[in-house]
Image 1 (tube, helix red, strand yellow):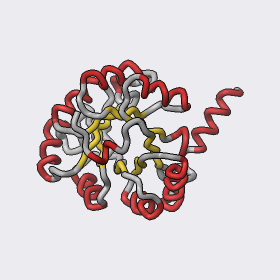
Image 2: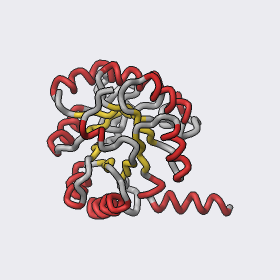
Image 3: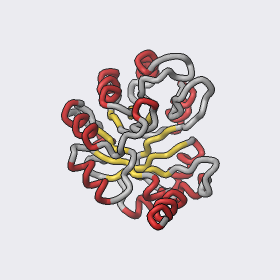
Length: 228
């Protein structure tokens, strides 16, 4: 497995997702910048961030590699993570080390599939690293074949055909790690240090933890559920 220097920095380490959507209390580039700084001080090897505004602020606070995304709900498609070329262009211009995008088999807002659009993206930006956000092993395998530099389990449970799947899905992570020759990034459902250890034990190259570290509203809900 030939690994790019950026990806080498992530091997066996933790990436922290610092995101807050518009309807969440911590929605603010300033807050995400400080959140990323706290994650860096805690030992994070990288940051996953949503929106150009947040990425710019995070860069002021940390010198870690960034996986950049732009979430955008668009009519007629369930694809919302970096859904079009417009978002790719904006993230590239910001200079993020890795651009992540939905690599599921769902039809995209422009009516195309990932098979149709990703070759165009790679031709436009041949030196950019790309992460495939997938929901099944088959999607991750296809993403590798299309030329993605790493594959993630980000969207397990978010597609109609994976709803209800337990996450983190250790079986899928292990199968990906054994059969797909690019780094496998475990993401989704990692709520405890035990979960994190488990994904690494099943072959994950690196892992992204978000809600359990950076979303206090969701963390509070977990505690409340425990005492109901």
